[in-house]
Amino acid sequence: MFQQLKTAVSGAQILFVAFGALVLVPLLTGLNPAMALLGAGVGTLLFQLCTGRQVPIFLGSSFAFIGPIIYSMQTWGMGATMFGLFCAGFMYFVFAAIVKWRGMELVNRLLPPVVIGPVIMIIGLSVANAASNMAMGRAGGQQVMPYETSLLLAAVSLATTIVVSIFARGMFKLVPILAGVTAGYIVAALLGVVDFAKLANAPWFAVPQFHSPEVNWAAALFMLPVAIAPAIEHIGGVMAIGGVTGRDYTKSPGLHRTLSGDGLGVCLAGLIGGPPVTTYAEVTGAVMITRNFNPVVMTWAALFAIAMAFFGKFNALLQSIPMPVMGGIMVLLFGTIASIGLKTLIEAKVDLMEPRNLVIISVVLTAGIGGLEIKLGSFGLAGVGLCSLLAIVLNLILPRHAATHDGIVEGQDL
Image (cartoon, rainbow, N blue to C red):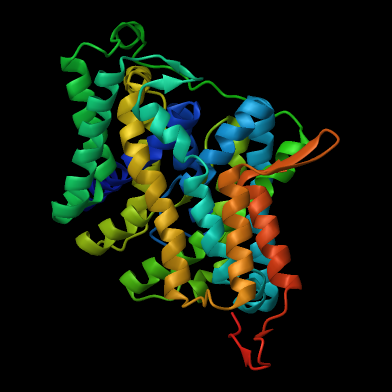
């Protein structure tokens, strides 16, 4: 009995570590935080079902989909966006099939660092403008909160997040987003800009509001390439947790099974109206610190997340967080995502003196940041989806070596 209680407490601790990032995505994209909790909980259980509960991984809301969800919601609406997210889950099954068939060799050929790096950078940079506007209290081109107050709240949440991420130790180092949101919320409450009326009127128990998908193939084709980056991130996440526990999960239960489990979670999110899920580095860090490698801990974390989805007042509390508080977090978050893309290029030693590499990265960055869009009738492709497609095609058609003017061949295969 005591051991079970200890495991349950460890599960609650895992949810606490993942919580800030988990609910941040729906708050930024306009989705229901309760559905994010429900999707993360059920998604993690589906993942454990696929992997025989062998891998200590918790699935939370994916940052890679923030920009695409915002764009899709504005372009096609909620139902179509959910259909696109549901379809994006099938990209994981494609990767799982490729890994099962050919191992990682074909994946690495189609998606080398010169492709993945700039695409990840675009995931962060394409929505940088939205982060700045939220930090300044602007929405839809209008000043919806006082400018000075907005900047103060954004600065408090940003500064707290930075301080915790750099100077905190142990478990506290794993919750910088939660710390930043909490500090910003407290200051906002002291300044009187938090609306507590909805919180007071919210019921204690409330069934999360489901939102069914509506078939829209344009939204689906837009979302499919977006799943490439988090699918690759998943592979890195599985290898990382394997390094912590000393087990090779790519062999048992197998990378194809972990990818399929993650894909099921993404599909579920699209069916119920929540954000897609992915593996969390914060959770891997928590596992490393606590040295608790028991996957049952993740089962408890999932069950707690599901229970919290039905806590009406808690959902209302999340939705009462002022926009600039979230904006301050986003300023750091989106820049961090872009930095991860840059890190991918640096670690792989991608040679920017080689013309083909320079062309791929330059085209992707300009098209993504500049908002290039390709329209064919009612079908449109833009953002991360277009950038992913451009990067993959350029990588496949451009020659692997480029000759200099004096005829000397230089460059390296990637």
